[in-house]
Image 1 (tube, helix red, strand yellow):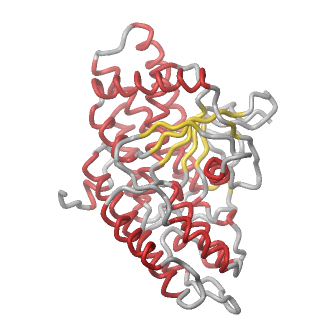
Image 2 (cartoon, helix red, strand yellow; image 1 turned 45 degrees about the horizontal axis):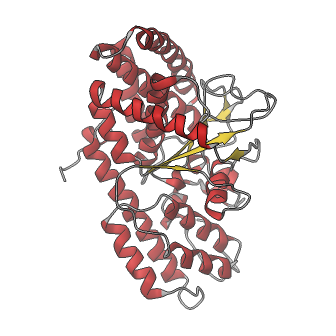
Image 3 (tube, chains in turn orange, brown; image 1 turned 90 degrees about the vertical axis):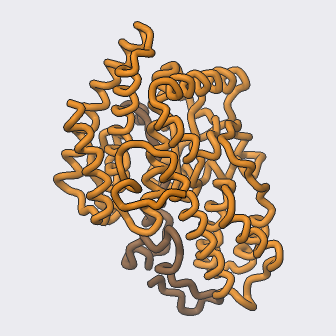
Length: 333
Length: 51
């Protein structure tokens, strides 16, 4: 693995190479924290030690299910509630997660009402008590259509932006297809990611914006994961979560961490659309949509970066990462 | 550091991956809502949220 410097590790341009480093670091940090929990819980937590040791060894040597991070999250919260029985049970369940062969899998969400894993995904995407939205399994027809869009999107990326295609494949273990509430008065979602589901993205499979739209959705959600990887050891934003600001991508005011993410991912969406336009591979209809989306992404970035510049308290890392996005947008306009 | 007095297992959140980004004053509340950096990033185009 190539040595990562601060410059190439946090560069705005996509790179699969640095993602291998980020993934290894995320798994290593998870293993360290689990070992710390086991040490602190010695004599109190009841866990299958041999199985857990094997899990930790595997965790440090190869890609792991995104669910592993979610189980760790729940172990910490169970201990926080002094529920050591639940923490022990969760640690035991963690050791039963199947090993990952590597590569990107597209899976369909099961019904969260009847399936514990589906319920876990739904819970991690719905952790903001100020809003609540429903998440359902997609119909077979919608899921098939979405799989075709993803295939078409990767075909475009492989031809027009192979660096991003490589980075997305390195970042993501799972694309989970789901469906939202169709009631026009209900909250719904286009896509979602979570730090504690590192390597997974959840997409609303009921989409009508074709391959160009899917390219941007993959660029968007994978960029959230990239930022999670950057922030393994250091926060990007130092504003408190109860400070809320106008978001470029949501109507409801959001914490600065969310504004920061939205602004960065919008620049990444702009970049991929520009790459595809410059590659010359788009047909007339796709080019027309791409040009429209390019302008919209530039507008949304401007909205976001103004809020970040005015109100954000960024860590040195956060400032450096956003400078890369800003420099790209300035050069592109 | 998270207050773990009277807990059977004492955890220092500064030692915990992800949780070490939770600011100590907010960590005292012990709610998931305080963990902005760890919260899900749910997005879409403007207008998705219709209520």
